Length: 156
Image (cartoon, rainbow, N blue to C red; front, side):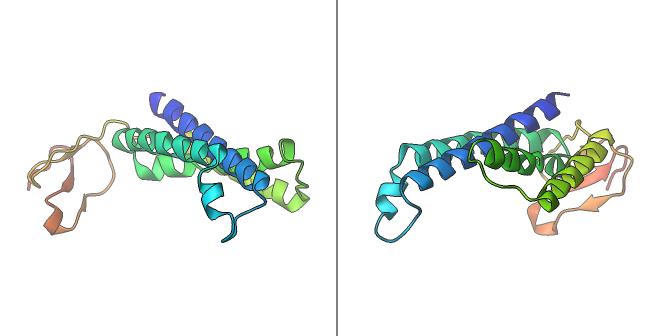
């Protein structure tokens, strides 16, 4: 449950950063060679960048706790929030086909969220014993990294 909360927080920060960037770019008349420095120093652009930095730190926390194949699809909720923000905040016209796409994303998020996340990943350095309580198949990282993932109880 804690992982889901972190993912939702990450998604909200990412979408908020995009909203700030859109506001900043709109106020500056878009991005061109003439206003590049002014855009880069805009409080909205800088605020969006700050939110992205925080979102990245939170994403690192998510990746250290959950499988990428579980967490990453859930991050697509940012697309849903982005469409909603465009429609509600910026008064964009959203065609029906885009709304259908949003519904497909929502269905995918629901399906992925019903899968069982493996939140108990343990990582040890050295390539000798990485324990991952998971019923899936054995996988190995490239040999030069020194990192390996084995099924629980398997020694190599």
